[in-house]
View (cartoon, rainbow, N blue to C red):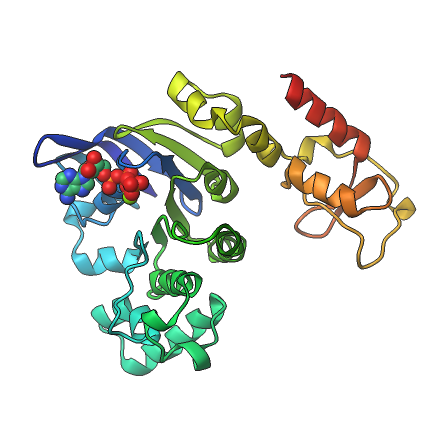
Length: 321
Ligand SMILES: Nc1ncnc2c1ncn2[C@@H]1O[C@H](COP(=O)(O)OP(=O)(O)OP(=O)(O)O)[C@@H](O)[C@H]1O
Ligand SMILES: [Mg+2]
């Protein structure tokens, strides 16, 4: 879907911000670029939406070279959430959400309807918020408007540059858990930038660790954490390795067969999804009075149980590794 082939960006003054970077981002996935400040994340994103020009290399969107696309098609295909929100302060919330539709010539009624629909989707009541100005919103609400704006013209790809970077940890977690299922359900391809490794492993289907203009390793979060390919990647995760392993070790292979009729269930009984991690299992076991938690897949089919004993054993394994 998005292909970067030997991409280099040199800024005047001999700064190589992106250095011979090759990367493939698949359709429908959430790909997270993670790396320390100044490693070239924003530049990589701006190369994709042509806010900066390539020094060398090629970028393709659905097989089309982006340099051959007109700006109309590019804006139509790519939504962008800018680092530090970047809402227009003198535009109302509705006008901010409608910026791209307006640029590409939608009529007023269609923009109004779309803005109301999107504000509702990101959890802001249009009656209350559409006529406000960005300065009259909290930081978290501004971020929600930023996400609504990126979705406005229904692009296939959304580029998000530290969308939740400036928020307190609680608001950040709320937005992560509310908004990432939203773009997954809408089948968007998302390129998400962060320097927060916990955010990266939580949101990313795959992550790419970036340093000094290069991508050092890409893969599923659990694989990159467990099998770092070099010293830099390893040291990037070193300080929080145990927590990250607890977060990314899925319970799927730990599910045991158990007769469903013997499970005590009421509406408060916790349950798990096979993609949940060990931390979710610990949380569920803590509120279960049964030492075991049932596991159901997305279609609500019963798969078996996760037991207290298995989770404890797995955690001990991680500690001893
Ligand atoms: N317009 C510019 N002119 C010259 N150098 C630039 C320009 N924009 C960025 N740089 C330099 O390019 C490098 C990469 O910057 P970039 O903004 O891509 O980093 P980043 O990974 O997004 O960092 P952060 O996490 O702080 O946002 C930095 O050394 C930066 O100083
Ligand atoms: Mg940046």
